[in-house]
Structures are given as C-alpha cells and as structure tokens.
Image (cartoon, rainbow, N blue to C red; front, side):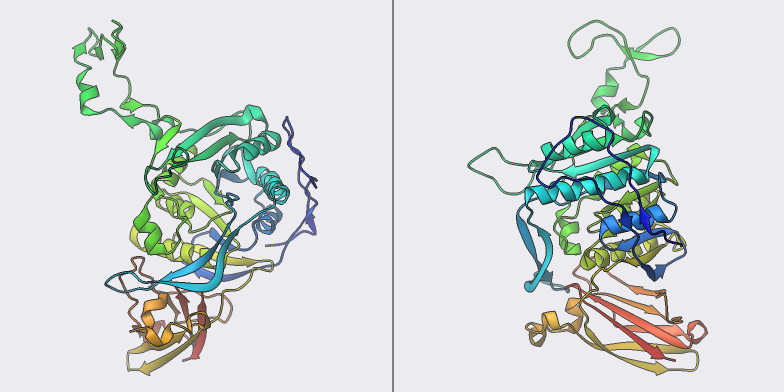
Amino acid sequence: MSATPAILLSPPVGRAMLTWNGKQPPPPLAVPAAVEVERCGSGDQLLIHGENLAALAWLLANGYRRRINLIYIDPPFGSGIDRARRVRLRGPGPARLIPVADVEYRDTWNDDAYLQFMYERLIALREVLADDGCIYLHCDFRKAHHLRCLMDEVFGAERMLNEIIWFYPRGGDGERQFNRKHDTILLYARGDRWTFNYDETLIPYTRRQLARFCHEDERGRYYWNVNPRGERVKTYLRKPGIGAYDVWTIPIDAALARDLGYPTAKPLALLERIIRASSRPGDLVLDCFAGSGTTAVAAQRLGRRWIACDVNAGAIQVAARRLRNAMLEHTPLSAGFAAWRIGDAAPAPQGDVRIRVTHHSDQATITVEAYANPLLADISPTLPDWRCVVDEILIDPAYDGAVFRPVVVDAPLRRAVLVRGVYAIARANIGASLALKIVDAAGGEAFTVVPM
C-alpha cells in the first residue's frame, strides 16, 4: 500500500461549538510507516497495533476515506485511574492474581488535553465514515456531556439519532449516591440516510402478549380489541415483536472478562446488537479503541468485515487470541486477518523460550521446555509449571522471514486450561525455517526461529 506525505481533514460541520484552553483544528496528519507482522488465514480484516490517529491517517492514505459503514468506539472515560496489570495464573483450582509492576492502561487526563484528543479523532473518524454510515460513541457520566457537544460540532446536532442507555445491574452498592449502573452510547449518522435494520432489533412478543391477539377479522388477520390502557381499538399482529427501546439491559460478562484478563471487556451481546442494527453482512466495521477485541469478534461472527486498532500491545494480544478462537469455532480460517504494526507502537516486553525439536521420518515434534518473562521473575520460582503464565503458543512451520503465519494455534480462552507445550507437525508442511511465538499473561512475548 502506498503512502502520501500528509492527510488533510475537513473542518467540523455543526453548531454549537465547545471551547477549551488550547483548542485548535487538527493539523495535516503525517502518514506513518506500516509493516505487516502476522497473517492468520487469508481474509482482509486488519488488526492494527498503533496509535489510532496515526492508524486513521494510514487508512485515509490507503483508500479507506468514506469506506467504513459502521464505527463503534469505546474511548477512555477520563476515570482518573491508571490501572496496573494483574496476572491471573492459568490452570485448574482457585484463581491466583499476581500484581505486575507495569501500567496496562492510563486514564488520567487534564480536561483540556482530553477534549483536544477526542476532537482530533472524531474529525478523522468522520473522514473514514461512509456517507450512509453511523458512529456509536460509548462513554459514561464523566464525559458524556462534553462528548455529546463534540459530536454535535463534528457531525451536526441534526445527525444525532439516539442517546442509548446501557444498564448493567451488578457490582457494588454505593451509600452516598444512587448506584451508578449505566453507560451512555451516542449514536450519530454521517448524512441524511443510514442503515437501520428494524427487523433485527425487534423485541419478540412474549407468549402472554401473543395470547391477546385472539380475534380474527374477515381477512384472516389476528388482533386484540382492548389495548393495555383499556381502550377498545383494534391492534393487529403485523410483526413478530415490538421495536427496541433506547434503554438496554445487558449484563456484564464477568466470566469473559476474567478469562481474558481484561476487566473492561464489553459483552458480546452489546456489540452484536449494535452491529445487527446498523450494518449489513459484508459491511466494514471499525473500532479504533479496540481493547479486548469484542467489536471485531462480534463482526467476525456476524459476517461483517472489520478493522480494529489499539495502541496497547496487551490489548492486541488479547484481541488476536479471541479472533483466532472465533475463526476456528465459528467461521472458516480463510476468513482471517492481517496484523500490522504502525508508526512507533511500542513492542511487547520480550521473554525467553527454550524449545527442543525431534525429527522423525514423517514428522517433527516441537517441545517447549521452558519459558520466562523478566516481568514475572519474582514469581517464577513459585510456579508449579511454566505454562501457568502462558496464554498462547503459535507455530509457523514454513516461516518466510518476514510475515509470521501461524498454522498451529494453541490459544485456550478459558484460564483453567493450559497450553499443551508439545506439537507434532508433518514433514511435508515444514519449510526451511520454523518460527514459534509465545504470548504470556503479563503481555510479554517470545519469538524464536529454528532452521529445519
């Protein structure tokens, strides 16, 4: 893909305008260098490791202007918390959480810096959004009022379709105010037409509701003649349910977050509802604050194409592991993805691996004998098995020296399950070099190449 020197962004289109210290229009975007580092299957989806404004510049320079049909973003909430990474050891038995001296996610902001950060990204996102596309912005009480003003300014207040309330009844019980148990999702269209699949959003009638349609007219249509307010009017059974409301009760998937080791992972049900409502099969979905990859997994399961981006190497690791599992379980591996590193994205901390290769007449056996990550040096002597800290083992038996193409994928999602550590590969599938990659629960990686 070719690059251009800089990308010019269109100015905002709406009123009124929010102001803050240091507000300025985004400068032309420099297009960063990009390299493909991994390919899983043969699909054209993109998993991008890099700062998202740089990634958007790269997408704009490579043919994605007004190409994205649906955008969902879950940006920083401005919570004032920098979350330290905690490692949940793998294996059966009670869960063990180990703190690591590493900050996984920073969410401490100066208000002015936060607004400028979001302003620049919303303008760039408008550039990639299709004329009939929609954008969902997920936030909470801390920044919802500011972000709605920014969305009005960038997209136009008349393009605001819904303020969706996501209610999740779980967690602690505050005693100094009403319990804070909802997030806000702002839905805007880019233009005066957009995709909304009404039938996909219908709430099915209950058995009790269907029983009310007990009268039949002369044309064979069923109706009830007393509505819930006691008024005698004919209400016909015209559709299998009622239109969804803008308040959604969807529980947080605590088990998923625990298995992924990613506490802020959003439930698949939430993203599947959004994708079903505002895109069609084959459409292109973008999430440039991808986190644990829920948007990409939901899009993959629903037959949409996707682009996911995150600056955090640990988030990219989790997302890739989920996507590999989703492809193996729900779709053919041909519906794969390419992983790219863009700009100056920081690589994952490097660990050390020791492997042994045993050659046989018709196959080779690869045995991982040990793995160590310097971040986990304090707990390594206490581990019953090195596999307790390993999330993935991937093998490319015919590594070309440039792009890693894993064929052997050992990436259990459930934390009670350990990787196998021993792998047999047919000689016919082995090239001149074999590459093995390990991803650990602390965000570290090891990559080794073995001449065959």
